[in-house]
Image 1 (cartoon, rainbow, N blue to C red):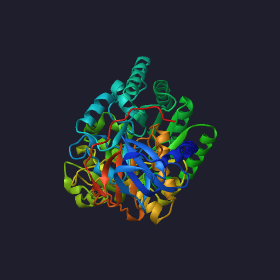
Image 2: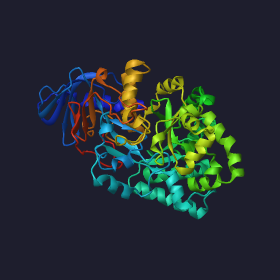
Image 3: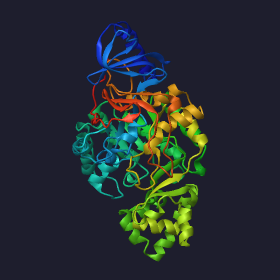
Image 4: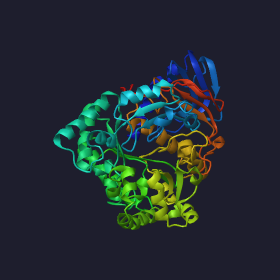
Length: 531
């Protein structure tokens, strides 16, 4: 598929280079930059002309005039970045966050939302809500398997009946009509964890019928570490769903979680490579951090004890016998994630003072065990956490794979809201600074391809992720040396710095390094790719 991006871009350049030099007028011409066009082709010096929200020409545009010129000498010109796993949908519907300045500061111009099996099943309603205030970036919606299942079965731990299965299929078809690009699942989370492989495969067959051969399934896999089936078997499940439905599979935010699983990334990668050699369309995405983020409830409470949700769990642990039964299981889940010191509380509204503290610190201050502290926190709130559980060796190994895309798995927040994972405000800039510029884990071209042309093709986001005539004018202009990843675990709300210009649908959203507050984004629907 990467070759497809190269062929598309290369052929377009050859066909259009001659007329690109002819004198014409554009709204904006970006001049003199080093153009990375979204493919893995070598970059070239040139210009980009923009008009009516589209790219008018790419190449030597010395004969062109424009109402506005953006000087890109000494800078890179690339397609706007696509975040394949974003929790920003709720953020983008909030006053003050809808302009997406934290995303644009990283160069992100499109986000794929409703991941992990979540989000609403009514995508028309979500579209209307997102467009009420206007959008700073484009939004590509998924429909979540967990949401579909929950709308029919609630939180019940059982297989759907024939009638219920038909209702679930109907919900997927309705989401496809409303513009869903694919199906997400969270097989680690309830109620998704209650589904067998065939249930998801069946819904992906429905998605393929409704959406077409570009339908994809992106999954927070059943086990990223050593909780149940193990990370290798969980990756195999995504391969099986893709093969069984004839669709595209994505192992999202791929990792090996916890010291017991470190190093298993090699085996997972070998299974993906073998599947791809058999013709199975399987890919992955990744965020560039050693820490993940989830809730203490999901991370530490055994699945059976999650039945009925957190309120039911709180009632359950009020029984001393049941609490005693759960304590060793929670203790083991703390251990498999790297210990109590590796779990930092991100959000706990009942007591904001503990946000930013580790479970170990909280337990010590209260004079109780970490597992007792965890139960006390979860009894009051799901309690979002930042969990330090990955090895740098695994992160870098996965990042080098040709089938690896880039994601944030993040949302954005107002300053002062908790201590969230910094990935929502810094993931893309961190990859370019820490892993391209500083550690030289991969080349700039590889990193940009993983953020642009590759996700555009895998997720069928047509006419984006590439710099060719006729594509939507989402693009970024930056100097790699000037980029700064400012968001940290203790100061996670800080915006990245160094983007010189960012265009969304042909409108400048970042101009000379400053946000313009333009609302040029939209909620996308699938569209045919232009030749």
